Image 1: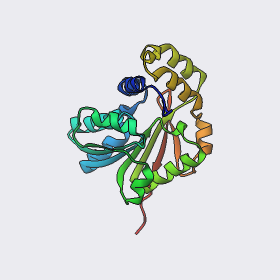
Image 2: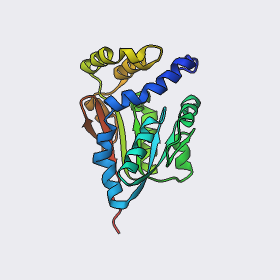
Image 3: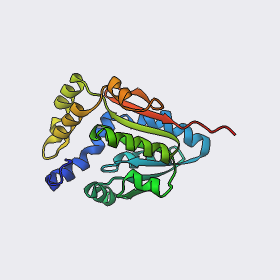
Image 4: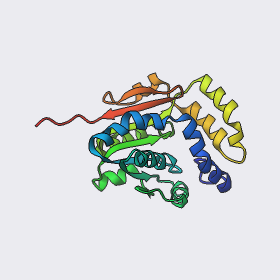
Amino acid sequence: MDREDCDPTRLHRTYARFPVVNGLLSGWHRTYAQRIRPLLRAHGTASLLDIGCGSGDVARSLAQWARRDGFRLSVTAIDPDERAFAFASQTPPVESVAYRKAHSSELVAEGRKFDVVISNHILHHLDAGQLAAVLHDSEALSRGLCLHNDLNRSNVSYLLFLAGFWPLGLGSYICGDGLTSIRRSYTAAELRAAVPASWSVEQNGPWHHLLVHVMKESSA
């Protein structure tokens, strides 16, 4: 689905089915409850940037969970792919969620800052230089917390995804793209070796890593 000449109908179906896959596997509700909701409880409101938002389903879910809990989470969801931006922009609007067609470097150049910077399933798409750039941008854009969620490569995850999600692959890129993504993803040791020491790699459920960076408060 990364190819510019991929079938637009199948791509649209893939974006439309992302909420099912992420809802079942990606663990964002757990991450929201453990990492983001405490910030909202402390301050009442917070701002969040979703880098490489794809269909925008994670951004929408986070804003809706926060509103359900009585908080306001202002979410900016960016993706440089025109097709992803177009799909996300055409979904039913969710209060406090805005989409932009942009790279993270553009927001750095604008001097933007967010309380939380996240991504979902983008790290395995990046080469070494791109990974370093995204992590640098994340630190520059964050006032406090960065959370990059990505797949944990294993033979078990590959086989279980193939067995459990092939029906969602019918007429879409879900199954093929998902299996390719698992093959291209990191093990925990590989991810630790690929990122600066200031970033920690934590297990996020059985199938994912959470790459975490917490900004240190400057001393007066």
